[in-house]
Amino acid sequence: MTYEVKQRKRQELFRKSITSKGFKYILDDSERDRNLYNWQDKDSVRRVKDYFKGNKIKWWNYYFDAPEGQKPDGVNMTRHLVSSQIACINHLFFIKHDKEAVLSIINGIKNMPARIKDVMNIPCDKGIDNYIAFEVVPSKDYLHEKDLKRGEFCTSVDAFIYALDENNERWLIPIEWKYTETYERDDMSNGRKGKTRLSRYCNTEGNNLIGNSNQLKSLPDYKHSIYFQEPFYQLMRQTLWAECICSNKEEKVLPAEHFVHIHVCPKENKELLNRCYSEVTDKNSMEEAWREMLSDQSLYHLVDPKELMSPIANSYPELYNYLQSRYWQ
View 1 (cartoon, rainbow, N blue to C red):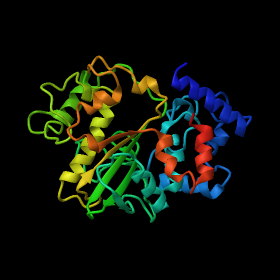
View 2 (cartoon, one colour):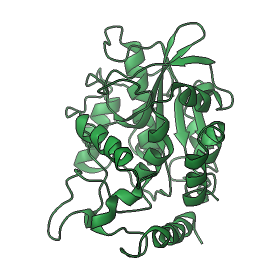
View 3 (tube, rainbow, N blue to C red):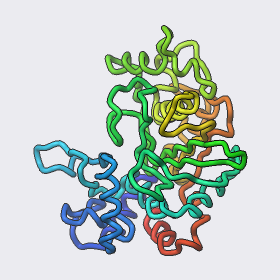
């Protein structure tokens, strides 16, 4: 039984524990709020909804999130209990106001390239005490994607932390969140859209973002390469996202000297982690394949969500127990 099937069964049992409505791992349309931790608290739910609405962020939706015959518009959270966006929010949103909690999970990651002494309010979000942001896009179109909207149609990061190290240097900490995702061969460099993507990220006529990167290794030919196969396509774009911001001395919103890329994925998701992506690499796992493309190994960290959240087990026992019960083995 695959990890995805196990989690669908797990989330079906979770749904039955909180409501008799809905079916399998899908909530009833009237009970979308129950996808969130502490859904019984109306103020807690309102804060999540206000955050998405106030910062003009689209929810990830599935076809059944829209009325029949219509396309989902991303205005309301999904009914889908096996959603990686919801998993990311449930893990991180309810501590985002707590500087010490955010510091503890970042400094709890093994072999980080620097000791973080402070996390800063993230200026792209409205309000104060925003020490974790969600679906963040850059302030400028560094990746030539034209339409920078949070949560849709461009490179964004699932979660983001803006930090200060012991030398008072600033760090971008983009977080990519995986749950049950797996990927079959889908060459993102094929066809008309593939031509656009190649031109955007590695056009050898002056716009070679990958070729000019200090972190991503150059290749003799990018078409059909690892950089255009998921999950590496996302990781490539997020690496460029952070590197371009750090290298631009005129960056006003998130100026930084350094970045470190955090990749959260359940260690039980063997179908993602242990797959041999033989079409684009001779390595035997996702992590080995991606690390082969990186110049500085300390700037990429693959972390299990339970291990990531372990530093807040005592300070947030109710949240930790909820995550344990709903998501973790």
